[in-house]
Image (cartoon, rainbow, N blue to C red; front, side):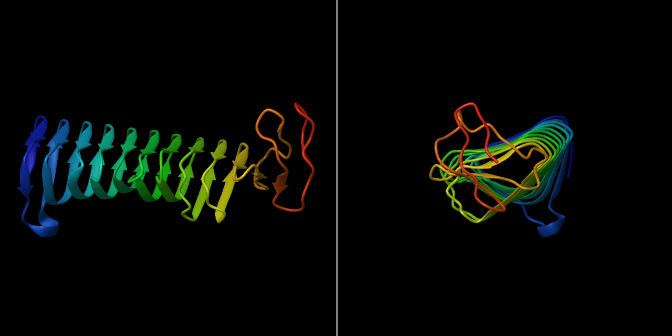
Length: 212
């Protein structure tokens, strides 16, 4: 189905056609209520999906917003992504996962990644910018970023590599990632505790000083 102009739908809708159920929109898309059965949804503008929306693949030239328990199998987005539901995400812009039901099997983006609130998580993150994770999820995670990584979840099984500075904050501890280009870090204003480098243990430096 090809639609010229914006698409806004509310109510209960089940789309038939299996993997042939594809909708192309020359404009913005706003879906609310309960919608299922769409295999692929593409828009030249922004896409907003409500909490009871299930879509196989979403491709958008603008931004993507998925609320509540909304579910997208694969999201390919040129703009930003704000997710309270679920998806595997490829984006050019910033990606934000917020709320306890938000999760992604993978995130690959040129922008920043922010994961906040409750049990929100992503299993694999690849970012050309920065990653900030302040949720409480204990899911095993791999993070690769060209910028800085700030990680404060409860997971002990986390693999972090940062082009800037990478921290793993957990119970007063910090892990300075070996792959980081920065081999020293100011700890005094960040936390009290003993920083652990990936190879060997080093005592914390004085406030305003450095470790290592």
